[in-house]
Image: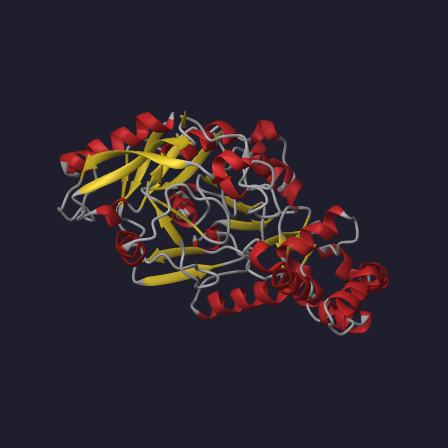
Length: 428
């Protein structure tokens, strides 16, 4: 069973990096198939903490070949900064492969992202301002810059000219910004070409060959289901396909190669940016949960919005992604609560919804219908089998499993690599 997709079930920050790292010793390839440096993975290895933004988490596992797929948009400055930072800490980064078809984030994408958000005012989406959306927009509008373009200066110059024809009018006449010159963009991008060239490959072909050889390939999604451009809380979403279906399109392999889909879900819920969030907490309990879980963005540092576990969202993600296994993270954060609320359904103007409403207005007005479970006070970070958990913690996990329409195979009981309980193997 070599093709394994890892996706976030909620709005991101669920701990996908740790799940990828868990598979690392038996994984041959790890592929980032969507997004850019607008999300981050924090992975703890021993006493070392690594914050990754653009690179696949598998880069921390010896012997694993990390791949940035064609569905990713790449900020080259960020890419080389991360590679240098990891290299300075003794991590071998020489195995990284980058798709020739991946698109590049340029200076003008970052500028447009920031000024557009400010222009929208209260209607802003809550982007990270890193140019992700504008880069994907250019990709769809067929005026994007791809990695392979950096190796042909004439083609690169033509494409930059085409992209700036309209953007400079927008920057100058609407946003009162200076025009961007073709030369400055071309010069900046070409400065990375020689360093980038050895990493660039037909990554779709490499991955197909690996899968034919029964090597284990992990497809690591950025963001999460509820931020997916089609299936998330639109328009408060990311600009790429963050669901399991995106793994095929964003890496260049056929969907028949994807054998298992692992969903990562927190024992509670968080999100960043704007948009509906039915279980969100605005009180002291929310502050406690945010502080205890250290819910601050890996990439931005901004506080995350926090709330209770949302079973309808997990069921929705299970259906949309075809999830076969769940990894439940941060169960230890709930230790000490006398009661643990779980959202089992929604109330929308007096009507009960057991599933996520398809209508955006209904979801925006949804109020959580909560069920309460007894908490526990025991330290669970040393538990390595399910039976070692306190009975109330076991009951909580089993209740979530029943509500979520798929099995919970792995439970995170702490931030470190080995602070997990494995109930079902994710590969065999």
